[in-house]
Amino acid sequence: MTMQRAWRLRSRPDGEISDSDLELVENPLPDLQDGEILVEVSYISMDPTNRIWMSDEEQYMPPVAIGDIMRAGVAGTVKESRNSNFEVGALVAGLGGYASHIVADGSVFGPLPDVPGLSLPKLFGSLGGTALTAYFGLLKIGDPKPGETVVVSAAAGAVGSIVGQIAKLKGCRVVGIAGGPDKCSYVVDELGFDACVDYKNGSVREQLDAYCPDGIDINFENVGGDIMQAVMERMNTFSRMALCGMISEYDALDQITGPKAWPRILMSRIKVQGFIVSDYMDEFGAAMEELIPWALEGKIKTREDVRQGLDNALDVVRDLYKGGNQGKLLLKV
Ligand code: NDP
Image (tube, rainbow, N blue to C red; front, side):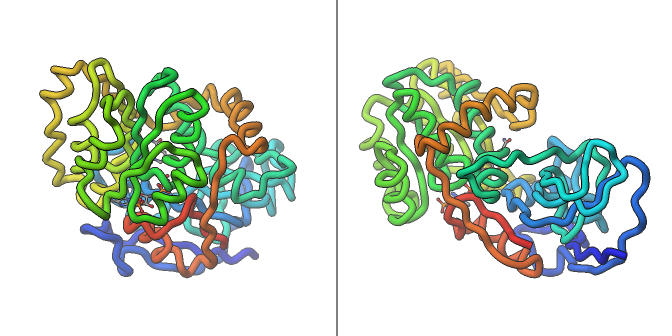
């Protein structure tokens, strides 16, 4: 019999995730039913959206129910299978949870290819949903053209770092926004952005004015709040904004009062579109055919921040909302 260790949601966080909101419990797993697989989890993707799933705010998936295992993307190995599409020993990724093992029907898991030269954290963490989010948000909604100015917030993070590098490949001038000198120098010196606003040091508005003298053509928005407001105040006529995330506001989604930029959207005819990466699922395969060679050739660089131990899940996920992560945040079980 397999024992499962899993974090279950006990209460919906009020503000920051607190220790008492989730509980780590150990239970024996029942025998598999027809169609099910048992996955031994090796990596959990720690994502800003985890905080949204813990809330009961209106969202793009059902909230995690109280008492259920906390939902998360996972990668792991099939240990038992009663589904003919999955062989024991296969490497898979899909929608699982903060858990050592997941029992699932085959529909929420798929095979993970073995790509020589790309480690599992890179392939599953940075180049899976993360790179696809950057790719579709920038190319489909941002619609970048050579010479345009692109601003991306949370620029040193998993999604933002790839957005900026793809925008450079498309011939754009790219300005990141990140917290602190180390993250800003990573973005400029290692990833090749043209400039980076350090929102923790000095005025965001003054730095944007200095780095975007011709205004902003594309805003890839990851953060929300006053940073989003400052960027929108500088967007050009017929500019585009891909609304990917609003991490600064996830702890209090019910208290958002903005954006205050509606007149600007009207006067400058800004196209603002929210999106969820799964909107483009039919095109994932084609996108990966571009993204994987870019990664192998070093045209897009990624870094993974791999933490250890299921017991530490809450401290690890909380780091996302404080900027404690250096790249794609993963938990090795
Ligand atoms: P990151 O690796 O970018 O980590 C989050 C980063 O956000 C932190 O490192 C921190 O960077 C920044 N941040 C946190 N709190 C604040 C704050 N109050 N103000 C400003 N910056 C803050 O995470 P991801 O790349 O996984 O996610 C980035 C965004 O993309 C999130 O908003 C997420 O919800 C969204 N997303 C959307 C998807 C979609 O389908 N629409 C799919 C995947 C992600 P710093 O140190 O620079 O402050």
